[in-house]
Image 1 (tube, rainbow, N blue to C red):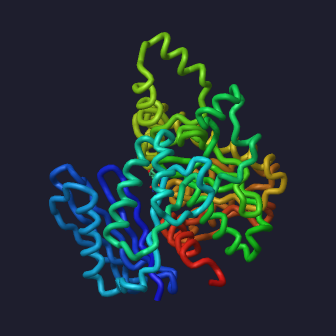
Image 2 (cartoon, protein in one colour; image 1 turned 45 degrees about the vertical axis):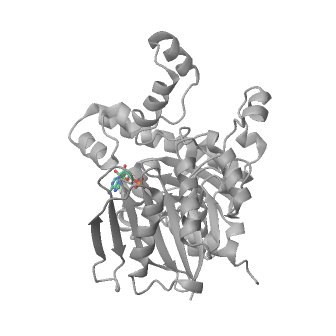
Length: 406
Ligand code: AMP
């Protein structure tokens, strides 16, 4: 039996999910949250044993002063679950890591050198990397005999050609400061592209897909034969689509103008563009369900926010169609992409001349984990796919610790 534990360590939380890789299913998931904040708690969920039975959850309030103790708590919680085989059956631990820079283009076995290399990338992800590193260090001491693998959110996009990843600024900015497009949500885009090809019964290398990951953070990737060739997020996750609280594409002169006119600091601007912009900046709410409900109730600001959200999607749809030349499939995933038939319908409206048309009945009735929603005469397939970043991390971890043929 092969089991893989996936860990996602944040500044005050550690999320985990345990997978049975032979059966391809999750055995347990949970998180320790509010680490170091005095009132921490462990939440644990055991999936339903049959499709009809409910999943079981428990929540324990317990003081967790630091990540080391958080990891101990997770180890103890796992060992109480009868399906945790432990020992040699736990063949690997996969860590979600936000930014691999240009150093990491695939899943990487963690050793001291790798930790140093990740440390060197902290300037590219100053908020996330320190927490990712702590998670790796405490997991290595909690499970010293288990190989550990870092899976980077940016790695999938390391295949972008230079003309797609460079910005048209002095080359010194790239050479000295690493300013280029890295892209994010790579694990999700990679997973969804594979599911689309599998569903269509075609080799991944034959299918050209545009994947829209529409969650609170949102990005789109043009994928040629399984390879990412362009993506909407850039140096940071701020670029591209309109998001819950992030602005997406912007004229950079706005920052200069605002700095001069209002005198707000660079740190304040960072906060506004990341946390007070997007849907929230436009209409006061970042949850798409609430924005749609407000629009339906006649709120003009909410209506404009939704229009801008879908208009930006359409612009990228056209751009990435042109990038790929031949487009076989469009896939919608993540919270909004998977659950909002309305956003999918509006994003694909009037695209008949691009060979993209959605069937309203299929769009309304589509079920997870994957389904097609295009009309019978739509040249391009349109799919709704449940993303599973943790499972993708588990698969990449397994491939790294047990390469095929070994
Ligand atoms: P995620 O970041 O993938 O968890 O997605 C979060 C986003 O999905 C939020 O904006 C939610 O409002 C949105 N979402 C979840 N369910 C729905 C739904 N039924 N309709 C519209 N948006 C939804």
